[in-house]
Image (tube, rainbow, N blue to C red; front, side, top):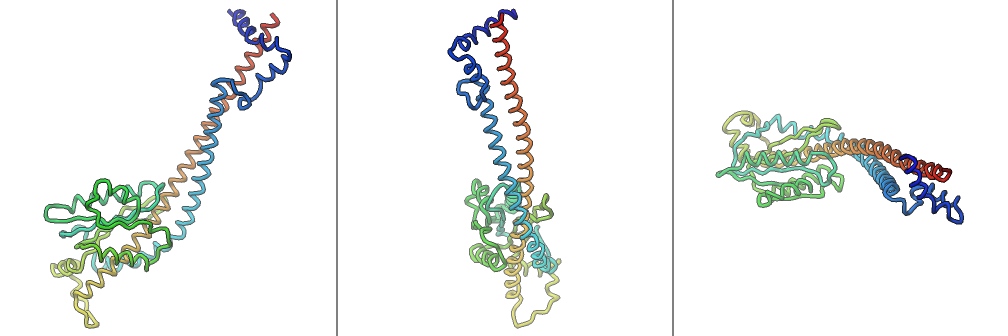
Length: 324
C-alpha cells in the first residue's frame, strides 16, 4: 500500500520533472501561500486568518484610544459632579425627599447619554423610568415622560411615544454649566404641567460602579399641602419669611431653584457614570481583542505549519517515487 501511494505521488510530480526546467517548477511549489494563486483551501484559510488578525488588531487600537479619551473626560467632570452635590443637599435637609407622595400629575425626567458603548447605564435608567410609570399611572393619575439624551429617547419612543411630553438631546456636545442646565430646567417648567417631578439618573460612585437614583421635586402647591399636613415638610412653618413675599411665592421660587440644582447635579453625575462605564467597557473590549488575537495567532501558526508539512511530505514522497 505504501508503494502504491508513492507511485501516485510520483505521477503527481511527473509533469514537474518532465518540464524543461524542473528545478524552477519544484521551487514554485514551495513559494509562500500569498504568492500562489491556485493552492486551494489551505492558502485561502491562511489569508482569511491573517485578515481577521489585522481587523482585530485595528479594533484593539480603537478601544484603547477610546478608553484613554473617556479617562480624560472623567477626570474633568468628576470634580464638578462632587462639588455640585452641595447644591441639592440643603433642599433635601429642608424639604426632604418624598418619592412615595401621591399626586395626580407625575412627570418622569429620564436622563441618559447621547452616545453608546457605555455599558448598561441607559438601559438601567429606562427600566427604572418604566417601573415608576407603572407605579404612578392609574385611572385617576396622569404620568408623562421628559427625556434627556438620545439613547433614552430611542428606547422609550418604541412603546411610550404618546406619553412623551418633551425630548432634549445633544446636551453633552458642549461643556455644561449651571447656567445652561438652569435654562433647560426653565424650559421644562414652562412646557410641562406637574405635581411631582421624578428625576431618574445614575449617581457616580467609582469607575466600575454607579447607583441608579431617583430624586423627587414637588410643585409649590403640593409642598404647601404637605406642609399643612405635617411631617418633615411641616417644619417650614417654623421659618420666618422676610422681604414681604407670601409663602406661596417663596415656595414657587424655592421649587424652581431646587429643580435646577437637582438637574445640574443629575446631569453631571450621569455624565461621570457614562464615562466610567465607557472606560470599563473599552477596557473589557481591549482585553477580549487581545485574547482573540492570541487564539487567531495560534490558529494561523497551526494552519501555516500544516501547509508546510503537507508540502514537504508531497515532495519527499515524489522524490522517493522517482528514485524507485
